[in-house]
Length: 350
Image (tube, rainbow, N blue to C red):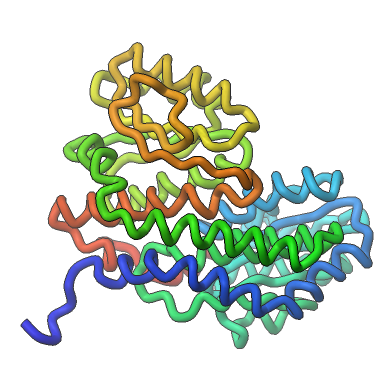
């Protein structure tokens, strides 16, 4: 019937447009350069990332990348220190990077205000140039993802990943010509992945009917493990969790019983051996292993093959198939992934 919304049509469209939105972000280079100069000019002893939800997973990725590129400590802020305990922290010479799709979460804004009170300059990243976060930041980097209306974040999340990566690379002097080439290459790879509608079919079949999923990764893939699990929780109302493979052996392995699905992210070279070891241990317990990576688990029940040379931008590529799995699995269960029960687009945490 004309005018009747098809369940999942918004999430599907927003997943599909991600490669184009990454190319659009290359046009925000003036703002990205300003944020990079804020970091380079301050010569910080510490970077602090403030975020919530999916944005916190993007910040986790940036924490790894910042330490590897800048060789200084990077930490994730704890907004409850400000809003719950009323604590005003003292920082060494620092720069704060605040990440929010909407730029309107009260506890994030309170954390940004606490940075200002401590004399810490702030680079804000949001998808709304008129947001409260944009106003409160010394420099604002627009995500230029365009309106995102599905409750589950997809294109705004990957825009955050890319905006943070570009900013940190520019802070270390990486030229735009190199960055432009790398972004265009990975955008083309993801566009090619998206053109294969059956690429995730075996993974979806392996997850159908289960009520628990573990997603494990290491290094840059830690963010993908957390975000992939969140997408499954949001859209399918199943018990999914994302873990470092190293941490998962200290407890979560104990929840693996016959039929438990384990999605193993093997694309990141850093810590890959621990992911492979966890997958083998889970399989020995009767777990169903899905590999997302270059094909290193010979007896995986299902595999989404991703051969990605650019490890630093790998999270852009490996999260997209997990978004697709979450979408298609929800539809197969008769759910509407655009409007998950009990959730809304902007979560105003305090």
